[in-house]
Image (cartoon, rainbow, N blue to C red):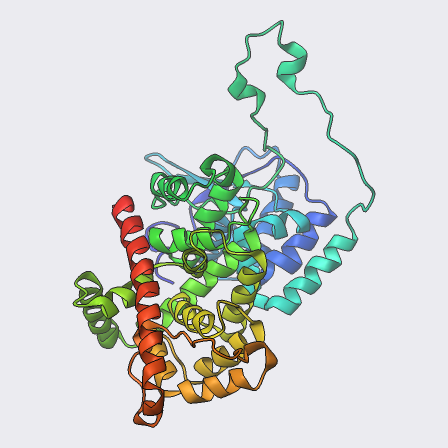
Length: 455
């Protein structure tokens, strides 16, 4: 509340610029979509300035902020805070002019998004999702969607300026594809320069994915928005991006936003206790940098790759099926499982069920891990060892998991040590370990190759 001191005074003047009038769609968006994010005071400030721009369009003398305080009946610090919210959300631009006698601000009002444009903006829709919840957001979307024209307008065959005047003027191809956005609100300005697009392009190229098709202007904007909203690192953005690429090599916006939210939530427990968080992160980082044996290398791999990557590696490099990805995404979303823990679960279940990813079995174990508050790869491995008999019984109770006669059960390498009660199966376990070691070694080989190529 003290940020305004020295920056905004009651005697400071202001002018208002507003190029277009608000229509009914803009008002609906302001009151039902923007207001939950900004609060009443920010919306009131916007509407007051918009109203003044109509009545004071020919003003020569600036209004004072003291007068604005009287109009809104709120103190100056609240006006300053409301102004910053409007600037941040993309509804206002502020210009400051100083001379020896006075300070004058010019407030340029920008039209809000229409309701449909609001929901199409990745950042705005995600902010509203966090504020109102999924059910209310969906209700609002369906409500506004009903008011949109439902007839098929056909293809857009409107001629562009350079097509008509190409002979008269020397127009470049860059201008041919440029679009005017004077009447459309593009949402909040992120100003995020931390995204390493070159690194992301390199990752996509290494995986034989068409970077130019995936990293479109719209998708880059969404990536920047989600990075800013959830404060994600470049590595986390890469994980979310690879997770959300469809079989047609297109970025699924819904899956990408979900993946970003999941990655953000998986990092939240580390910041609850400041001292413990720093210690755990330092210890964890040290272990990951210097794995002492194959098991620690395997743990590092499961922490750093995405479930999509793991499924592909377990399929001999083939792309994971859409059905398997949907199963994994549903389980992660419903149970709140982190990517690393999900990797342990995928590896365990696939090797226990003859490489078949069955949703019911996956969900049952995932639900158990969620109740046990499993958050790390090590915790997941430990629990899988201690509860092996229970999980085996769950699998044997269903026809899907019944093993045919003579088929050897395969378990992960990290599951080598069995309880003494299973000593009678020693011969079988030796076979399991041998096969599983080969599987883990192959995964580690692929992981190290990818890591070397990326470095």
